Amino acid sequence: MKVGRVAGTVVSTINTGFFDGRRLLLCDLLGSDGDPAGYTIAVDVVDAGVGDTVLILDEGNSARQIFELATGEIRAVVVGIVDEMVMDDADWDVV
Amino acid sequence: MQLGTVRGRVVATVKADGLEGVRFLIVQPLDRDRRPVGEPVVAADAVHMAGPGELVYFVSSREAAEAMPIRFVPVDHAIVGIVDEVHMPGEP
Image (cartoon, rainbow over all chains, first blue to last red; front, side, top):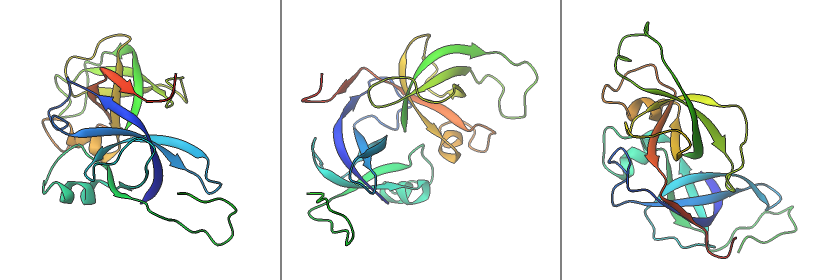
């Protein structure tokens, strides 16, 4: 899993159908220095909000398991909201 | 999933099995601020409606094949949605 921060939401009316009724979040991925290092668009299952630090699953089979699907074009899912994260040798706090 | 813009299309008559009728579009990957990043990729259009200049999001690797009607097809990027709006509160 990766740690990210929710930067915004993506609205999409026309899609393959899989994303109908699902919430898409644009999440910055956090590097080891705490700064954004890339981003991903992920489906939200925990009602995360903009500014939240989140846990992002980035593996297809696990993602499909969350939605109890055998098939589906899904890989990145926001699966947790981070309360606290400690990195012993870092001088920055996540939350 | 990543953001991208449609920059063109690719037509191929001779294709591997399973790719008949699949539209291939040239997609320029974008960063979160919608600036081009990296080289364009050829993506299958799984929404059948993506057009030139459109802001889309696409999946890569195995999930791209999952987006196609036939699951085990040689596709490594697929457009899975057209973006209406990216709402980023507090950012210009």
